[in-house]
Amino acid sequence: MRFCYLPHHFITSSPNPPNHYLRTMFFKEIIGQSEIKKRLTSSVASSRISHAQLVFGPEGCGTLPMALAYSRYVHCTNRGEEDSCGECPSCAKYNKLVHPDLHFAFPFKNAKETPVSDSYISEWREAILENPYFTLDEWSTRIEAENKQLLIPEKESGEILRKLNLTTFEAEFKIMIIWMPERLHHVASNKLLKILEEPPEKTLFLLVTEKEDELLRTIVSRTQLIRMHKIHDAELREALVQRHGIEKADAEKIAFQADGNYAAARLLIDRNEHAAFNLATFQKLMRSSLKFNPAKVLSVVDELAAIGRERQKQFLSYSLDLIRECLLMNYVDQSLVRLAGEELEFVKKFAAFIHAANGEKIIEEFNLAIRHVERNGSAKIIFLDMAFKINELINIPKPVMS
Image 1 (cartoon, rainbow, N blue to C red):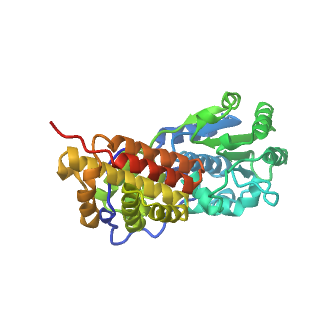
Image 2 (spheres, rainbow, N blue to C red):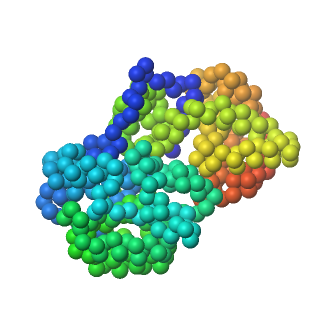
């Protein structure tokens, strides 16, 4: 992600921000990706719909929205040249994600009482209708699975086969969207491979992932690849202005920092709400780590462990921004420091502890913590280990300039 810190006081909304914007799976609602849209609509117009397609790209580029818009377009009975009509009986069902020939498989916390994806279908529909650009961490938070690994279990493969062997109810195609197929149980992956080799008639598989390299090569080789890319800054900036009522100047800063990731841009906006907590917590963590006060460190670690993974990542990202601001203040033109108020006053004092001898290593530790949080590691262990390492690094003397 690019570095361009945007403190909370920089984010200002327009006087009349939009109350809501349509999120019901149309191509026109997907930010950018015009070439992919043309390719998919053309495949339908020419009746060249591959039975298995892999939609992949970096986080926040719109892989799931693209699969949903494509599914709607395939099922639409009065489609236009560029998009679905939005008015036919099929589109009416898509508005609520209840089309009988549209099926889903996705990762969840497996338990005896929730053996298949349909156990969470209500939460799934709600998540998509609120924001189809949601991340795996946001999905995990929604189903209260923050400390559990999300998987698509072995039993799901049997459920997929059962659904696809049914006769279509209304449409020409049965569509199965598998979100995050890299999280399939290995037995389920092998069963999916067999289904892809011998698919039921008039079946469309849409595998949607951000980690194509983690899929079995045999699965990838049996799909048509739909590669998506980061959203262009100008397109993301425009979407932020229209959808969130943000001033153009602030939208430009957020778009630059988000680096083509709409999910990250939304988090940067949301971080505004938690800026005071993040600053206070960062101050406490640094002060307690400096002289390593075990009781105070444990207190901060407990606070961070209690806020959930998404907020933990926001805190770590915020911390990285402050650390980089310290380096800017020490070694670059101080006019580039984009802080004010309490944040600026703190960084002026704290910058003395962040320098050439430790700055890069401290940044590495925070980035490592982000990766561990993303992989469902124990928050208490992650933050306690980080505090120990920060204690060592922050006490390294500042080099004497010759």
